[in-house]
Length: 546
Image (cartoon, rainbow, N blue to C red; front, top):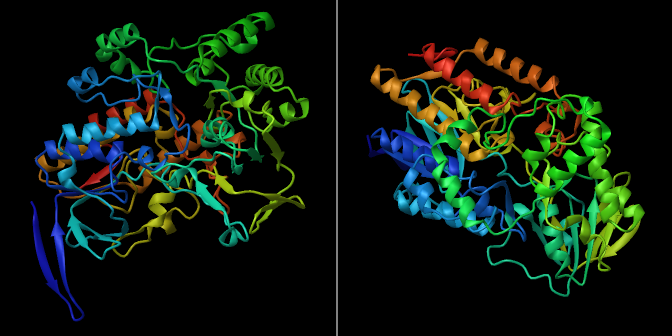
């Protein structure tokens, strides 16, 4: 179904485009969702606020931006020709390379003809009488469809701190999630980087190599492991591609959705200190986060076990950073290792040995204001030419909360999520019929290989839509009881781990006033996939279809 109807009101004549499905977002989730829904014969429109595909890899162009999942895993599996033809140059893909991959997928499958770029959705309203979602763009355009899929991403709403005086700063300021497409040259500049999460850790060594002087303002030290990035060995690539079918299947039987790492069977507390030291050293030299977390089976479950790994990393920091005071500031001690995003770095700790780098600890102080010439922190004035905010995102719920989402006469999504997100499987929300989410809150999304979870969610959604069309059904939503049970399960699963002990963006802790609730599902991709398969096998248990 595709049409445009003209509605005349007292004030204006409005053209409403009609589709079978509307998808919001043209990152990896939106692109694959479009491909799947097209395959069902549906007329689909994708709306994307950027002028190109790629989602997070379109926006995050800061220096050093790189994926922390290995290239051969971080890719689509739905087309064997695609995964055989594409060649990744390095162990971990850079932002430009991943964006080129996304653009290649869009061209290869002719996706752009159904994507409207440079368009922001401001509202999505469901009409229960017509069983239609009506979306309105920032240009005032209106489109309707029975189904609406939110592929808005988990890290797509940059958080720019509301520092006093920021509008009066005479220099340049940047946010990692809104980086100028033409790039930034910091050569000879006095630069401040505020924030030492993943993006800060990736960019700081690059900026330090350019700037006259770099000040890093750190509130919370994070655990970093070496990436050990390198050019991809052609033989490794050939072997991996030959094993792709088996590896892709095996990934769904792992907690993080990444195959190739034997699951640990031993507690860290069962090993001798010497055994632990040897194993942690091997993992450190190997590089990567999954391998390190797989050293023992209780690193995310037992605080004493976790501290053996944490202390190993703290000792590494002390051995690398020459200034003992800086080393102590950089050594995390406020959260168990892995309960915040475990970062991968290239020469991050070594950067603090440079003469042109100064670390400023604001853990017990504060940045009081941005001045015309720099900033004021803990009573001291600093002067800068450029300020970079590596302050993260309103994660997982921010993009959807920015839209006015309503279903009939019921509560808005913002009202429903006032105390934290509530979903069924991270895929649907009770009270919001025919609205699906890809890697929504309370799914494994951000705690997994994202493209694998994207494909699993989109496949579930497409199969659900196909089931409804086959059986003459037009409306689907989760029951309130199924949603309550799932939220309880997600919370109980998180509470059995160390994750809630950290004030992380997983908890919404980086956003003032945001409810503190652990948002991802940490039961593992394997358990989640089995749950979804059981739901389908039992006739879409927990959903009402009419």
